[in-house]
Amino acid sequence: MPQLYSCRSDLSHRGEGEQTSIRDGGKDSSDSLKTKWCVPLLSPCPSCSPCPAQPKEIRDIKQFIDIARRKDAKAARIKKIAPRVAGGKTKTKFKIRCSRYLYTLSLDDPEKAEKLQQSLPPGLHVEEVKDTPKKK
Image (cartoon, rainbow, N blue to C red; front, side, top):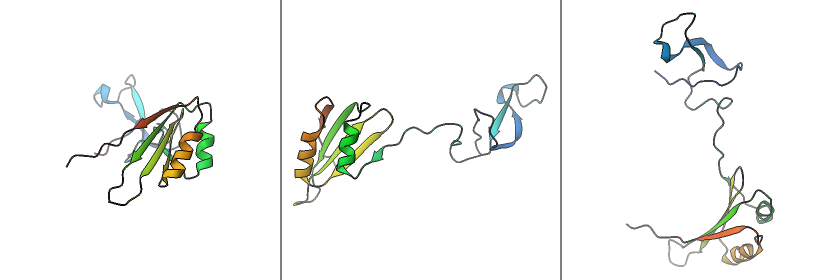
């Protein structure tokens, strides 16, 4: 039997009426606790339970600097990833934690990454994360 998800509000997307709650043992009586349920879904109903905030990838450096200057920007993490093949470029990821989202910018050019690191606001807590290679 597919799992049903409980609704928190009276919206028009509900399934076939009311079903008795599990707590009353399935008995249908007037004094039993009744709960309305959404139609069976593979994931929780989007209008009933909000999804946790997903990370956002930024591709524009200027937009990323503007986000870093916002008041809700709490901290920044910089992670330099060593190339997997000999002669490859070092990849640098910048992550800024804001009140709602985690914004990420990935750069392949080490010179641009160094300039961006210097242009981050001085009031922002910056943490450099070491990239440790995985053991095989």
